[in-house]
Structures are given as structure tokens and as C-alpha cells.
Image (cartoon, one colour):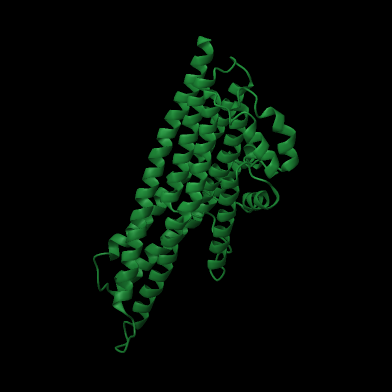
Length: 349
């Protein structure tokens, strides 16, 4: 497989021709973006809103690169390259709208968490009645989380799986790559560019869905199998997939003792908020139980610390989701503009 990729990359794209330099520029952007994502897991928490924002930024950058590339390549009017782009941009549009729906669904949960933090953040010594009310509020957050999981599961089943979501991930092996090898240089290399874009965007969109909507067992198995038995289009893509699988296994290991066998979404701030509310509920329950005992071992500083931590992660969750939502809106505008530009190019020709 390595020999195949090396010979393909050396065929035309090492030429001094400006067209091939432009094509190479796309692959450089793609490879660097994937490497940055893999490396960012070390500096940002896995599936944090910061990390997910980087995924949206990479999708936007690759889409923009493709539009610029088409404008330079002078491709034949109305040929299959246009169909390939329209199909890919439709996939980006549809899946990103599902992601946006997941963000909207988190609003009710955020409101419930805010109720908890507002009631306790400036109260260093809550009464028993206030503690019990806060515990009811936390229970309300958990109910919202369960409701959110069910709604997101339906969203994935109706918008992704029912519309061919099993094809969102292209499971390719060496034989498939070799069979299509001769076609990749078609349309001045644009066919290979679209092939790379389809595979990369499938991976990135799946990560967005896992982080912000829902992670089904089927999609998780598909990616694990993809990584283990397939050769990725780029080494950077393979490393990112391996790192994602490793991080997911860490998450699974960390929650083995919890009431859930695995989370329905991997959003880091959401998971931290859920965990902290469990700790906070325990501290509030301890305060209620020990209120009638003068020799209580309950530490008020622990309660204050948990409230402050919950407030911190709630702030990260709220601002991060707002930023991703704004980026998606900009991406939708760019997709509409990109489709219009390419159709205008064809009509002028």
C-alpha cells in the first residue's frame, strides 16, 4: 500500500505545472489539518468544544480549497466532477444541520444546569431546604439529559441512518484503492481531491455527531473496524483514527463503575457537568443527613469547590456551543455561495 501511494503521489503532482501545485496545495492543507487535530487532543480535552470547533474549521477550510481549485482547473462543463461536488456539499449540508439540531437540543439541558449553579454559587452555607431544592434541580438536569439522549437517538435514526448513514463512512481496503487508482488523476487530479475530501469529511462529520448528537454502537464499531482493517488515504488520517479510538477506550474505561455502560455523546464539557452534578448531589445529601449531628464531618469547602467547578464547565459548555453554532451558520453560507459559484462557472462556459 505504501508503494502504491508513493508512486501515485509522484506521478504528476511532483510536476512544476501550476495546476499540480494547486492540487498538491489541497493535499497539504488536508494533511496538516488532520495532523493538527490529532496533536490538539494533547492540548485540548478530547471532544471538548474547542477541539470540535477545530473540526468545523477544517471542514470549512477544505471546502473553500475545493472551490478555489475548481476555479483554477478549468474543468469540463457539467461533467461528473460537478455531480461529485454537489453530492459532497449536500452531505456536508445535511449532516451539519443534524449537528446544529443536537446543539439546539442542549439548550434545555443548559437551562437546567444554570438553575443549579445560580442557586448555589453565591451561597456558602445553604440551609437543608436549599440543599434539598438543589438536589431536586440536579435530578431535573439528569432527566433533561435522558430526554436529550432519546431525542438525539431519534434524530440520528431518522436523519442519518434512515438516509444511508451506513455509507457516511467509506470502508475501503487496498483492493478498492488499487481498483480506483487509475481514475484519481481524472479532471487534472480533481477526482482524487474529491475522493480524499469524501473520506476525510466522513470521518470529521462522524466525530461531530459523536461529540454533539449521539454515538450509536453501530457507528462506533464501523470506525473501529475501519481503522483496524483499512489503509487510510493519508497516514495523518490513520493516526487521527487510531488516536480517536484510544481516547474513546479511555472514556469507556473511566465510566465502567458508573450507571451507564457508555455515554450517548462524548462532548467533554457535558460529561464533566454530569459527573460534577453527581459529586455535588452527594455533598448536598451529606449536608442534609448530617445537619442534625453536631459532630458532622462534612466539609463546606468541598461543596463550594464543586459548585465553582460546575459553574466553570457550564461556562465552557455554553460559550463553546455558541461558537460552534455560529461557525456552522457561516459554513452553510459558504456552501450556498460555493454551489452558486460553480454553477455560474458552468453557465458562463
